[in-house]
Length: 143
Image 1 (cartoon, rainbow, N blue to C red):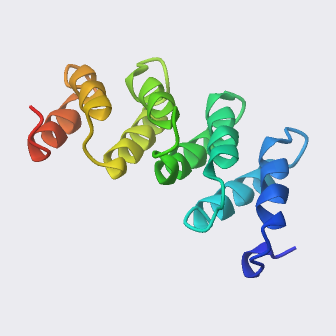
Image 2: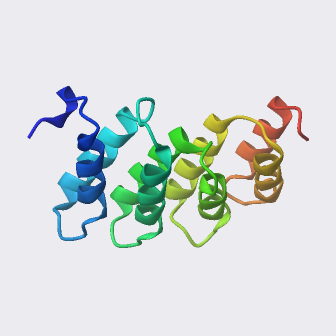
């Protein structure tokens, strides 16, 4: 069903169920994450969406789904805990670089803050993301 054209609040609830259901086909879950991202500006309560996306980000079963969740979480950085979740992925050298970079770009979209500045300081010495982190720190005048 093409849910993009419906503005009913129950659509978000349905999308969350699809996103969290590991029995759903991966493509359906990906599409649901993308639709949640598209609706981020009209969600009444962003906490359940951010929680669901955080759970997907932590589920190592599907990298493509995790990438989409990391990008979507960039629209929910005002929700408590989201910056920490994104930061944990960005600084974890054991995570795939594409995923780390997606988390990094979501942090960048959030804008400067003491918490993000601290994460960027950690990343400044990182072999893969160090240059990007140092550039961002300088641009935000946090260095």
